[in-house]
Picture 1 (tube, rainbow, N blue to C red):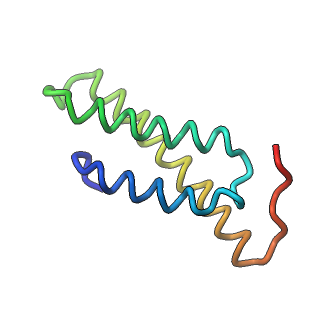
Picture 2: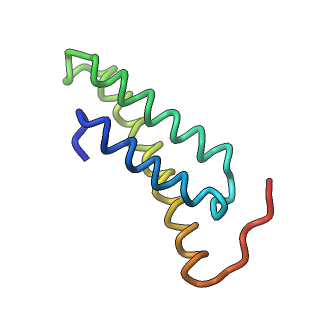
Picture 3: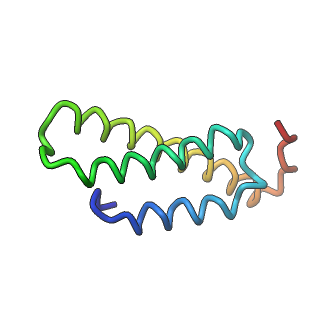
Length: 89
């Protein structure tokens, strides 16, 4: 995904929200979605893309995105395999 395209991030998050019933740790998932949005907004306003702060924030954004995709992948696997929904936490 292009780091300057907020639409890509929003689309990813919207798709993930559709799987909320299959995601085990909803609070951590929602935190990752919010972090991804916030980091994208912050990163898009930073002018020095080579700064240590930019790189640190970019890494945090990647970690949040990875968590989202891992949660979605696990939810999709549960749907495909017909596993019961996880118990609410």
